Amino acid sequence: MLQATGSAQDAQLSVGGINVAARWSPNEEGHSTVSFSLSEAVPVGCYVPVHLHYRKGLSGNTVTIPVSARGQSCRSFTLWPSLDTKGSNLLALLLIARISLRIGFPGQAEVQFTDEEAAFHFFSPLANPQPLVVLPPPGTCVTYHGLAQQDFGARKNLLEMLQSRLPGPALNAGPGVVLQGPAGARTIPRNVDSGDYFAFLGGERPDYSRAVQPLFLSPGRYRAKSDGTETLGAFETEFQVPRELRSRSLARLDSVTRREGLQLQWSDGPKDAPVYLLAVSVRHSTTAFGACLCTAPPGSSKFSVPPSMLANFPATEPEATLPLNLVFLIAAPELTRFNATGIDAGFILPFTLTGRTVDFR
Image (tube, rainbow, N blue to C red; front, side, top):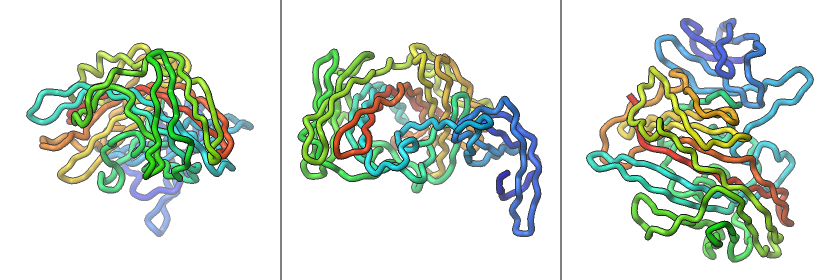
């Protein structure tokens, strides 16, 4: 049972991507109580998406509800280690990324680049996680719409993304965190003024703000270590860098017709972890934005985003600034956990991101 605003006329309610029959009971305040039953086909999870789609093409933002088998607890799927650490006061996250993008600038040739980044960050668990931090169960999607001024901004690097999504203190973990792998070693240095840890590991930036460096990350085992300080104890642990997803359908994708949805195929995906699809569209003239995040089941090699998830995406318009209309494929293994004095828990999340700009029509 949910509380809703608006009208039930020509509206279809879905739970976990499965259409359900809903009973609307309006009250005097203009709200309605929505009652529905779930079938066994609805996926289980702590954040199963509930979506209202109108047959005329309009769509609402996603809300989530917990769904579990009788007598069992729900399972959460989270991109950040902030929902499964209740009772913790301070967490540490080492985020490592290989980012491959093809960006199309208006009136210019497309720019293809690969950029490798790493950030080490401290934060407190989120009591109320933000959208796109919570992942939907495998096989489902969530969608959100709003104003870019309030809800979305261009990412400059991993550290700035962590600072905005997972705010926390800048603690002293020593002069740097060392990464060791097949290509040697790289250090994630500490900025003495801010206390933050960030490094470009290899590759290039699309704005050519730094020289091209040899790539450092490749699939395989790596080791992260820090000598520690009185604030944070020493730690050393191994983790696995996933393969970069290969997708001919994404490479050839130059436009998306919203009423037809989006279909992608890929290879080299992880067998024991999901693949994530993320689509974003920002219309600069109105600041309207739409974002859709989907979780493909472990071992899968294709996924179809329903048209209802893209119904409220703003159409792409010609512009002279950096385009913010993109589609991504993301591969990330299970979080690697480590322990150190001074924190309740530490986590390592390596991932690969492959994406490109597209025109949403």
